Image 1 (cartoon, rainbow, N blue to C red):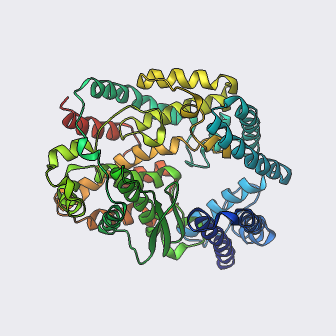
Image 2: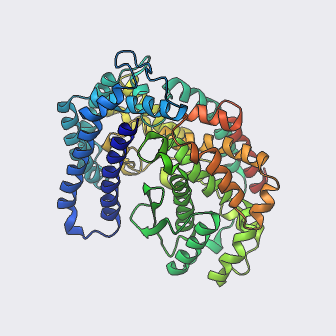
Image 3: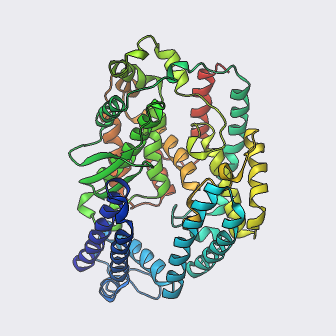
Length: 499
């Protein structure tokens, strides 16, 4: 076990080095350094892959597990060690079943497809992108076949983002969610609009930065083990629980965008900081899933950051940075930061409509993988669904089917994790409110330590010990359901829109 852990630690060190270079590429690297940086990152990626599939790792693993049956043969292992062995074997098998020729073919196609997508989106030219997407779907079907699956090809890809999740399970959860969500959107759309004129001003970006950093520290981001920088697209990356980086994007005409970006990424970063350092290198020092990671960012950004209780604490602080907001009262501010407005663009969507954007993408990509939906039909299907969900139609494919990068890099199965994060987060928060005495009184006073410590214990410190649905059941005592999220939305937005 010691040998296995040492090999896993060295693999993680290489991956961390590659992550540092990626972070630098997105923040400080000079534009001319891109080509060489790509070569260096590819080399490190190759070394990581070779070590992660090499004979030393396989030999160390074989001492604990029967390679034919997958059954544990070392009865001296404790529960953590058993889980490390099981997860390492699963991860190894996923890498070993892909032939070298396929990995090379996929890598080359991803590189070409991302470049084509960038130009196609800019030129509103879906026809140029379509053949590359067709090839991508063909490759992802082959990948699913290599991995194997019990029911549907899409299931094999979902497992890489949400372990244990299937097409049918997600369809059932989204089936619970959609009718109530569409009904809520309809009621909000029919209500009188909210006046947000105080937000339609310019706000100094240096003051935005100071306020955002103050909030990040207040909610619990340890800045002795983290830093924030600027990037074109906000993201979080963790090299180690003691070295986590977040980025934000600021615009003097968009006060809320930069602030909520910082809170969102801080939620991700606190998860990374809370992972169990003692298990660094092993799967137990990794997040349970993409969706569980998203639950932490959206929980802090929306459930806490857009609550009235939070702004009882934060609005007076905000006014010290921006005196032009001096006359805005709490009730009006709370309503204007929670405006619901159906949008064509996923990344600009509000808390209520966001999950509908994900359902649309889930339906399309699962049908491409499982039912042979033709790429040529995507623009028409996309536009029809947008009209059905939101009552609006894209003017062109650039703001429709071409808007997301995910399909160009082969991220088929990624989208559901975003909406799953809303469901996980609501169920986690329900339990936190019950477990933490005077929960919202603490939030009103600017004391977020109880929630942070609770999340550290219940979510972060457990790493990848549980698959996501098992983790939610352990935390809340109930199976995952869409009901807590919808109950939360209906209660909150009925008050805001006086429904």
